[in-house]
Length: 318
Length: 310
Image (cartoon, rainbow over all chains, first blue to last red; front, side):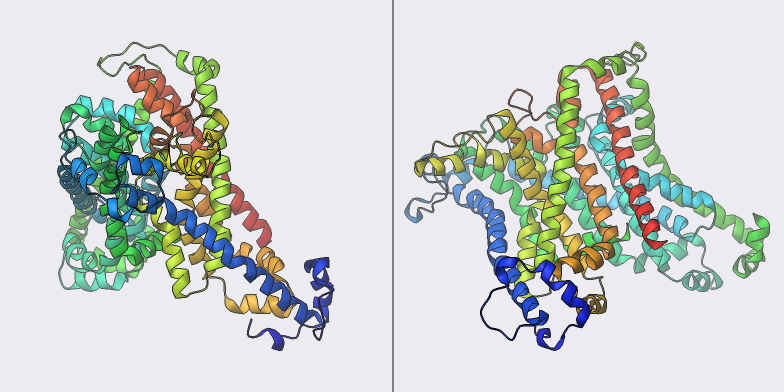
């Protein structure tokens, strides 16, 4: 906009400008006319709508979060009578305390279990997918390309759709309802993204490094372990963020593979058990939901730049 | 193969150490096998097995289910519940994908310039991405149900309230609304990144040539970010075709099955009814449809690019 007056448009624009400017705008007062002037007017009109539109969109995003937070500290009656209000004098910790001490759903234990799953899946995913990505990235035959395509094709297989046959496989292996079975399946689901990101990243690491290591007498495994893996830190961070969010937020897989019988509740399956029955009992619903989202939101608040950056770099490679 | 590889100086050098090369191959195999085995057992075998189970009457318990041939595929063509779920999944996926991307792109255009306010807005638009779809569904169900926050507020204002989740048409619209609310932030973040790759000089050139805002958007910006559009559309579509968690917690598939998606039918119904053979048949169809949709969009996009390039 600053450059506006100086970009005095050539003749060609005269043909364009009148088409774009709405007729109603034409009889505007004075102004040393000319197409440049008109365009300026159009821009300011667009920016006039920009602010209200953004404010409206932002409030749509923020209000549900506000409702979630304030209503977790209000009595059932206050929630029902004035859900948007913040009755400072009557705020209470009782619903939150009740949710924390709910005998049916131990939320702190669910945090611990879910966190354990997140850790196990991330470690196993790295251990399994980084080496194969190295082989794929350094490979030159079409078998290596085929292997990469095979893994990447996994992205398009809906995990919900795999669940029925996976239940069959896990029963066959005696792993149904076990942590091992769940972690193995969940890790397999991370492989497409991991292998894709890692092999693309390793390709950007110069082969000369490998060759230097080979000259120094390092075998392939040690070259990978001592030379390449340490350089992969940024992309590993990206993968860990993506996988952590998907394991933490997963519901269908733990619900069906672990099942209520195992007594192992993740945050999502626990909330489902605790809230599902009482979905109209808001004194139960809001505190439980708040407890469920708090860790993810805190993680997001701290890691925001990395989450958005990692996601962007990951998807843009596709 | 050995001819072409030995042609490369690096390989030739390595060939001098014939034993080391053999060892490297072995190492390569060792590094490959764990991932391939895990992937095979948990993805490929289940996929093949799904095809087999879809021809059986597996109930989830027996080890040797009886074969029923193509019966399941035949009956799902005429099953009103399946047909309704297919229709609802299609509407949700198509309308949802268009809406999510339209909102994401529009807002990305509005806040793509780097500034503190815009970064804050990006955060505000994106945050639902880190929340589980199940929780988002429960939250919105608490907001939109008959006695939920929104209706309480409407009634306090003297309005009779709206049947967001209690009437079929409304419920599907609400479901799509929540999908847009929770999903556009992801596309927005990618669109912003894509917009930053458009060279400022190109926009400036278009401006000097006298192109207006909408003309620049149509003729410069959109073609430049076309790959991002493809990625966003494919990812959104694939995600929406498998919607399950959100449906379960927001509407439970109701009212009267009006929001039952294919994935919901497969998981909620077939496990409940011990009809996993039938569920597998539905899974196969959904997998094939998802694959075709993703491939078709990518292919069409590429062809459009080639035509533009030619």
